Length: 472
Image (cartoon, rainbow, N blue to C red):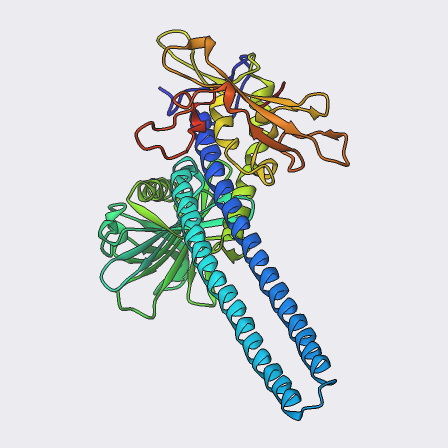
């Protein structure tokens, strides 16, 4: 029986995708919605910070202008007076006005600084939430990438420290740490295989000639291991505290066999000979690699092009890179799916007809619709949204119907009024930031959109949208 069922496209053509491709795609779209909303909130806070700074600057400028005009007016009004007391009072009033204006300016600056601190705290909270969402998704996606991950095992004070590495998208490198309580204690090679004896070069006999140098490795400790699908490197030592006599065993697949290479010190390198032993050791280490990925672990770091993902912008760019990687997948699935409103694959079933797995594009689109329009195209496979056009003649956008329990196909339509831009005659993308949309609440019911009647929160549940964006 095969390890996994054969996968075909919805039109029956061969497919190289994993059986879980639709589930993986759905998880990514859900995460994209979270990242898009978080980044939109972060950008909104940045705009508010700029507005606060501009307001403080304008207030200080107006106060400075008021001070200049006030001092000039006081002096001008007091000059015609024949009494020196009047001119002195005008001078003192000017000084008092300066003191008062400077106090107001400091107050405006303090208000701006307080607003900035509050907004920065909100931004840190958003960045922390976005980083948590990113790490949660990357931990989930590691399961799908299990066949391509690399496990690095190093010797710790009392046990091994296992790290899992994989590339979630182009340039997005992820590291996960296996829980300390789930890492094994130091092991000898014999714990992997009972007997591991390899030939490494030759040695001279007592009475002339040479004979093979046989190295029994099963008594050596594994002090470091790097296990990947393409290569295995083991650093071995006869004792845990040994600093000398270290061996480096490298295993590489070569055709249908495994090639071994032993490094003994810095100057001695020999081919490791023992085809059957090398193949068995390779298989055991690959199983160890996969078993390690199944242990409880958590994401410790994620780097995009060598930079850690810390703030909202970093997390958004990571989400954008992930979406860019899935665009060809969506395009291919869409091309080979007979229905226009779904994505599907077929799984072979030995006991009967093929199993059909499918997901409605509307179920994916509902998460994309919650992303701010200014960034939605950057996080949306446009094959899901469709080429909806919005023009001046088409001033209603049909977002879909509300899925109420008993309404069926008679669910209400959600309509948005389109306010066209002043200087443009056409907007080609439904996700473009140019149009302004206003909800026409007369077309919908409060309960139908999912607002809690007892809570009266004012929030709508867009997860109940049935269809994708279409021009009205």
